[in-house]
Each structure stands twice: as C-alpha cells, then as structure tokens.
Image 1 (cartoon, rainbow, N blue to C red):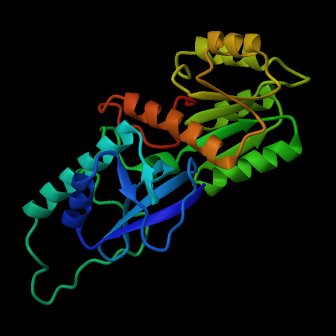
Image 2 (spheres, rainbow, N blue to C red):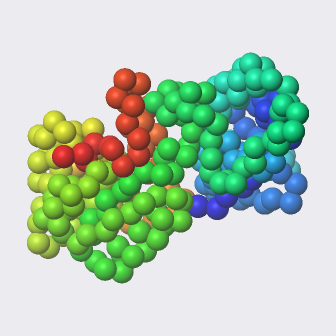
Length: 270
C-alpha cells in the first residue's frame, strides 16, 4: 500500500486542517493519487514526528485530488488532534533553561500512552501496523506474495502451509489476525475455523479467507462457520491492506479498555 505523508508545523495546524473539511483532505503538493486508489495517509507533526496513520481512498472530482477517510477513521483523527491539543495546553511552554527539547529519534514513537491509550477510540494506527498475522496457504508462491504484501504495510507475518501447522503456531505464539486460503488439499479450512470459534480463548481472532473462483455457497458457508471477511483471488495489495486494516481496527476497538492488550496479545493467545 503506497503512503502519502501530511506534515504539520504543530498540533494546532493538524487540528485546523481537520476542522476545515469533513472526511477528506486535499493531496499535498507534489503527491499524485488515482481515483479509487487505497493509500496509507501518514501524519507528521512538528520535527517529522510521526503522530498517526490511517487508510484512505483517492478521489478525483472537478480537477481536485483528495483522499477520503472512513467515518470511524476520520473521527479517530479528530479525537487524536483534540487529545494532543489538550495535552499541549497542559504542558509548560518550552523546555527549562539549559535543557534541550526531546528529539524524535524513532519515527514511529508516539506521545506517552496516557494521552491516547490503544484501547480507546482514538488509538494510533501504529497499534494496527504492529499487529501479528498468521497466514495459512499451501502454495509456497502465494505465501511469499501475500506475506510480502502484509509485511510492506507494517505487519509481522508468520506463514505456514497447512491448518495443522497453524494449530501448532497458535499454541506457540499469539496472533492478532488469521489469513486463510479457502482451498486446500490436505485439510478443511472451514473445519479449522469452526474449531477456533469453539475455543473461548481464540473466538475474538479475526479471520480473513482468500479464495479463487469461490461460489456464493462457499461464501455463505464461510461466514456461517465464523469467518469475518472473504476476499476473492486475484486481488491487489491495496484491497488486501484495506480488508486486513478493517478487521484489525474493529478487533482493537472492540477490546475493553480494562483488557489493555497490545499487538501480539490478540485472540490467538493460548
């Protein structure tokens, strides 16, 4: 998924840009977006400190290029801006004498967690980008291609060939989402999903099924077994990114603040 960077001098400029429009932002000078293209909008505030990011879709209208956000993402961005503004007002204006301003050595560093806990509606997309995904596909080339697509958008990916291998990995590590091929010669993927849904520790694990030439009956059966989303092959990287971002976002938002779980501590926890 291609990235577009939005830079703002301070949090006030960031909040002002969001207040001027409703659900979309004009593409920065020098950037080009195609109509309908999915991109990852990255927001940098101050000295190239990355504040957050969100998926958005390119829109061309009347010669104007802009990107449109889903309502939930737009509300999250505005909520984050409000939290940052409130935090800025509460902090002293400038560093004490003989003390340098802290720098942003890590571009993914966020403000302290107390400003915007990941379990709240204004969680950072950094949480989603750090998620751990288990990919199950018997075709080695497909595993490599899909794993690369997921890795390029910041996800940590473990790839296995069979459902049996996936069961072993779920016992060994925690995952935030499962990407599963619908057609496999050696096992029934839907039976695997049914088993997951019967396990109370793994019931919340989001499951995305990939399928080539799936029938409507296949789709209905998959959802009936507990699959969360269904993506037909062939697909483009932006489509896969948008689907997996949607599943991860819903999963993180559904978590109780009291659970305080971080990426890698998702529904795949044994």
